[in-house]
Image 1 (cartoon, rainbow, N blue to C red):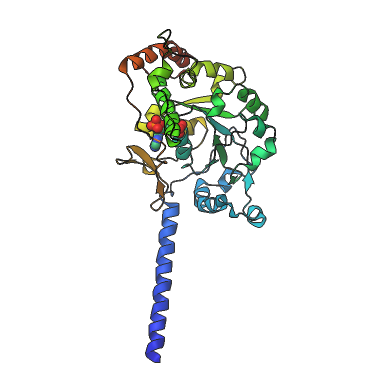
Image 2 (tube, rainbow, N blue to C red):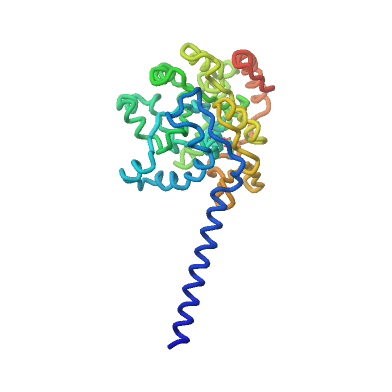
Length: 345
Ligand code: A3P
């Protein structure tokens, strides 16, 4: 009997010990290398009423796990009240460009403890039906966050949709706008590849890229083809500039975000007036994927979905040359307007 009791006690102690060690490891992982963290910087002084010192980034980082739980949809009204959670309208939006690396940019910015991402593309401003539901509907689509955090959403269709700049302006005329661009011809091929994959999934046949991008009658670039039109960045940007000054935009080099993400992210942190918190620790190259993946802490890391980083079909080099020549003057204008030269061919 005594022996049985001792064995039971030993077992209990072992379980308790493992739990303690597990919790300690979990805490270390959550806090990670955050000892150096400073208080959060305000975005144009529009953060909540509390003082910065009350909300060090360390605390925000620590609470991320909690926010993650809430995001799964299990938030009760009591928890929302208790933790002072809010659903905030975005203070920055990634407006495009489709296939520029919009998902990678959003996920990477979400590594920052002061940033909370809207996981889904909301399509509020480009979809008339959604827009008619009103701004409260939009706000309710946002994730829970602490008042000192900023919410960011991305819907790449915003960049090319006529009505969007005016609608966003009406919501917040001082919002920060992020545009991630890639070399226009590569972006057009990436766009085509995505559509092609969709067609193949439905067992449908589709034209070759060359046939769509070049008008067979004139042998010139087919400007009616959407993938080509979307890559004329300056045309779209000019529409936005009727509402917002250029200072409210930040251009992200999508090609560099693939090969060297950290410096691009640091420029965005600066633009958003956030203290630099994303470090090389948060980004590691995954040779199998051929892309950088995200490391939140020693336990949690992730790569983007397989639909990001598709293999492009081979395209006739003469078509590529023609397209690059076509985009060249538009690119020059884009560099001139934005003040960012990207050295595209
Ligand atoms: P490809 O599929 O043509 O390679 P978007 O999210 O706007 O649809 O952009 C998709 C593109 O993001 C991909 O285009 C890919 O090249 C790029 N990308 C940038 N960083 C990435 C990353 N870390 N992992 C996967 N894809 C990334």
